[in-house]
Length: 291
Image (cartoon, rainbow, N blue to C red; front, side, top):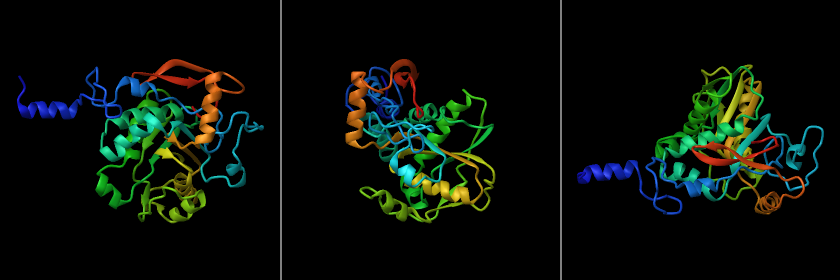
């Protein structure tokens, strides 16, 4: 029989219930999420903007450069291209919240694998500087970790084992100079104004001519990573890519995209379940630019 202290420690390290659906966990795992919940995480549809990874309505016209959303046509972001794994909804959103707000750090390992899966579509060169989007020091003191940095390390362990590119995680390249107010409910333009001047390249970091992969948990309007890319570009960075675990999707567009994917009509992706992420089957887009 285990002592009370040993039982408490065991319960903390290996929770017995899924933190998302509360179902009993069939297997011991430091990630307290059941396989049924994880199995519901699917990639975004392949009808995405080839620049910012925004999900586009089915039937959106493709040009010589692929599909580019109206926002990017009117105002190109400072980064070269963004990719993401899945929609910021349901289980994937809950998984990110477990990491950020409930401090379930093992979730970063799976989120990192999702980021790595998305990042494989990027045309990397020989050496890439991996830069997590930084937290302000006040937020770091509150949380005691930067979720983007944990995800970046996990992603690079997965990517480094699968391609010849040399990845180096550099959490010291960008600093967040001042805290910004919550951006929930803000428009794209309001977010841009809120973030102006929030980031800077640290004085000892040399990014001239560098190829950089910015990593974060969620891409919403792209304002945060675009501001990061802007200051990196001013400092001399060459190529700037973005990879996130999740992408915010408008409900109406998501409904249309997934409905068409389910029906097999039009330009919907062909799905297969040939790959697993974190031991869970993951549906992979047979074509497309962002998965």
